[in-house]
Image (tube, rainbow, N blue to C red; front, side, top):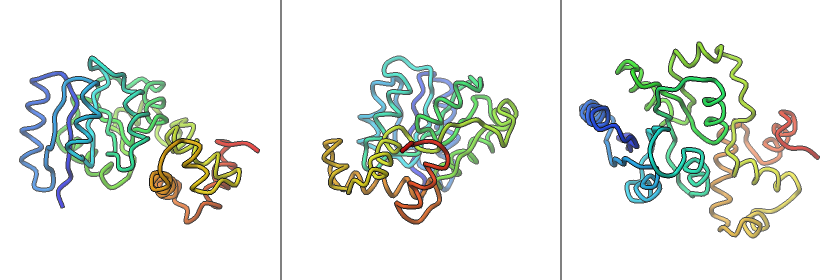
Length: 207
């Protein structure tokens, strides 16, 4: 199956070149383009991408707000940040907010494809230059979970059922189950108990 990619970038020449390159790949389909942060969420709902290639310097809604809003969706794309900025604080903040990967503009074509394919499979991916800046292997990320996933896990740790968690956030039980599936996948554990134990061990939640 093709990887459905949506591109959010307000630089027309770069965006057009990227679209032209990606559409030549047999396993990638560009399903949407936006030029403002305000248009990202509506286009995600319309296009249902697997991967969102997201510039962090667009007009409109801030990247952190977009990432937070995506965390509420029952089915959200994996986010690959696409930017010229490689300072560690920015990288860590965006990954902690829910981004799956971080791709620098000016990357080689093969690196762009590698990044898209990696995050589409649920793997984290960073441009080589970013890995160097962050001293690969010691990224300093506070957690692997988004803010909403961490909130769900905190309630689960208190013994809340899916129904009780859903009532707390005014969402459906289906949404809570989706969040739990993502949590188990990200933490590479098989059940809620292991997820809670992992979070306690990492210091993400407290008694």
